[in-house]
Length: 185
Image (cartoon, rainbow, N blue to C red; front, side, top):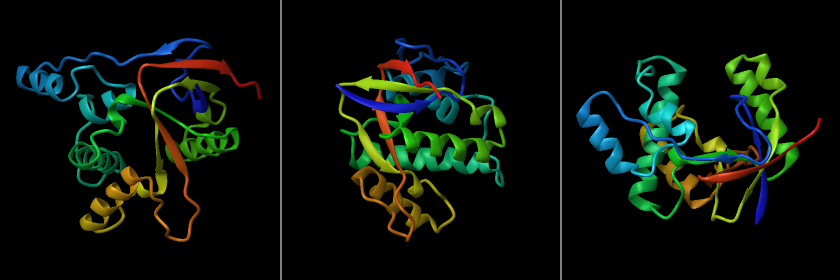
């Protein structure tokens, strides 16, 4: 069993709970059939928000739209070339070290302009499953589309961006997963 660390940005974790895949059924029958075909086991909360959430849409100039596009491109590359890797739509995100998850929490709070995230709890995540390490610096669409495609391949290959910045490794842990204890701060 390996131990990693995650930020409880939605304030929904408790010590020693199990995080499961959720079952979501779109109102449109065609979408419901399609979602069940591509992810019959369900979606994580991230998967719900980035793939299915009917409240989000692709708008031309929003940062949210860019995040949705990046997630979809990375998922399509994974399905096509790295099917053995865990889907970002069915995983929990974590870091290897406590210092890294604290840094991630600060980045997330700054990105969302949400002071509540700055004090979000950190929990251990315990798994015996095979995880994936991807450089979060690759999840950036401020580049030509061919470069984004290349970055998706690097991400799933576990290769860092090498743009002069240190890699920031996120750990994708397939669900279900056991949450450990809350880290006191």
